[in-house]
Image (cartoon, rainbow, N blue to C red; front, side, top):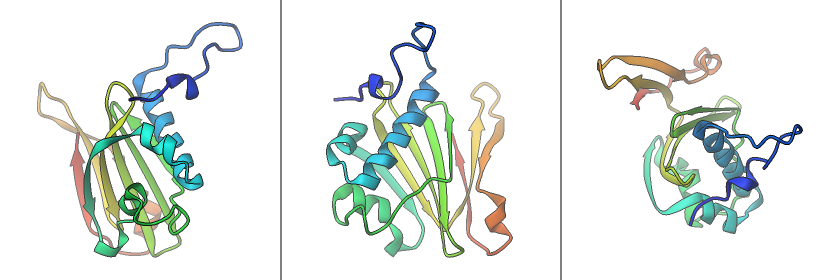
Length: 164
């Protein structure tokens, strides 16, 4: 089972040309579709977007594993609202972040397969994250994304690095 990319991308643009979007574009739109489905409790859409054997990793206070509770049905979509403030696609990864005031800050790192299904999820709650892109030939690493520094001015949080 996978995602129908026709739901995400139009078949033709206004000039009648079929777009051939990069996988990053599909991945970003897939994750946007997931958040929309989560906000409205559309479980069938969520089931099509997320692999049944989703690999999950969490860093943060134990009671704050809100996304996994929503994905597993342990809590309803109305108990905690995820509203991404930024979404960035890097290859097969999509990084999202959001915050609600000064007490809640989260980052999600989603990995999608070639069929556009989410196969891995990393959740960072009240944790700063820096994403490094590793060049395999040289083993050099380049920072490609960092948590929003605005929040950094107001409080101290643990800081982690994710190398992809």
